[in-house]
Amino acid sequence: MRMREHHDGSITVSGVRRPPPPPPGYERYAGDPFRFFPILQECEHRTVKVKESRCCGDKELPFCTKDGRFVLRSDCQKCGKADQPKAETPPPLKDAALYQALYDDKTLHYGQARFDRCPGVRYLPKYRSHLISPIIDLGCGTGDTLRAMQDEGFVAQGMDWIDRGLNHTVADITEPQDLSIYKTAICIDVLEHVSDDKLLGLIKNLQQTMHQVVTVHCKSSKERGFSQELHTNIKTQQQWAELLIQYFDIEDVITLAAHRFMYLMRRKHEEA
Image (cartoon, rainbow, N blue to C red; front, side, top):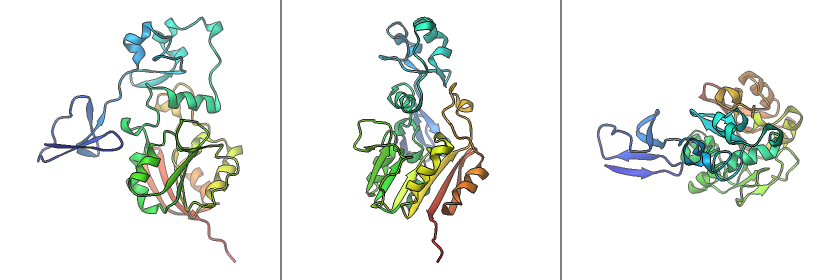
């Protein structure tokens, strides 16, 4: 039995006729009985760290996990008991600070491919053929999608307002940016985090490239387990489609999950 480890942290088993049981620490991928993803570990506050820290590890963060769900520290019974008095609790994080904390939290694995939490990597086979180098990833997060595209031979760079200490441009992707050197722009699970008053700025940046890959999630983040709403722009699939078709030529719409959709687009043809 041979095992191959992928860049997203999953492993594929070959050399056997029947699917083997999951290796320790892994669970079977629903789409492939010979592929296994790491099991998302429980938050550290549920074990020894509860006595050493007010919440989830070695620093104070706004989120904890509980029964596979993500809850604010104030809603977590164990962390709440060990936390400071309510009067001294800092106000909830917002905007860039909130997402910076999400990405920095070692227990959430937010956006990390090796825990199957990076949709850009997970769905790369579905949009690979639409990519033309050089590529700009608007909202590149952990950079895992960038590395996956580069591993496949694409020239790709990233831009995000979150500073992850990566070799990417730290900038507001809803403000005017010069992207004229790029031929493809990808924007994976970003639009639902952008309010309507800033959305047009992001769209104008996307319009600078020949090809675009955009995914949207049409569901509240609270329904996915977060007690704080992270999706500040919740629209139906039809509403997103009606918006995007005003600015782009949509070549294909791919259903990724019950409430997640991918749009493969081109820059809108300018009529004479």
